[in-house]
Length: 241
Image (cartoon, rainbow, N blue to C red; front, side, top):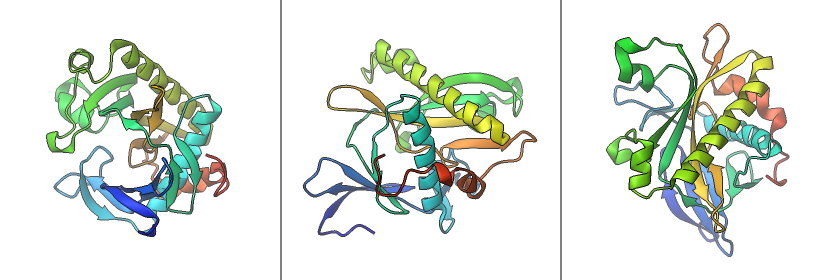
């Protein structure tokens, strides 16, 4: 873990710990082995509660995230990752957080099915439907309309459209990569941050903690399987992100 003489704890989250690095504007993110889900203990990437731990899952989710972020950078999508420090930690740019979570849904599952009940079926095609939720665990990350996002001055109309274009691009890049592997991307969550120059950047992580992956027969693809498939895409440790 980071040495306290060199790094200062600034955030201790459910799945990651964030440190400020002495003498640098960058931050260090350490991935945890925690699993999120619901109060009854059911694991779910959409849950806001820690329901257990899986030893070694933190480093696997970091590897998966690095692989997907590499694909995004190759497609010209801005990400904040600077370098991987070890199996558990990465150095990233410090960004101003946009307090929204943006969910892209290709097939109906999870909270979407629970929310709409008889109006939707599990696995129903949704063709990249985009939803916004307010990033606030205490409020339960509630859905928020685009009009409310504008009225509350979280981001403006142009930035909403920019984020939606980026999410669609991410969706296309990941689907095109995963399809030859026999994997469907059912849904995923993205977060965004702002660089000092105002540029919006994809942040956080992309892995089974924030996305649902399925084989064509509907079987869930978990972190162990994705790790084996994607680790060769992971940039060389210590190299540029």
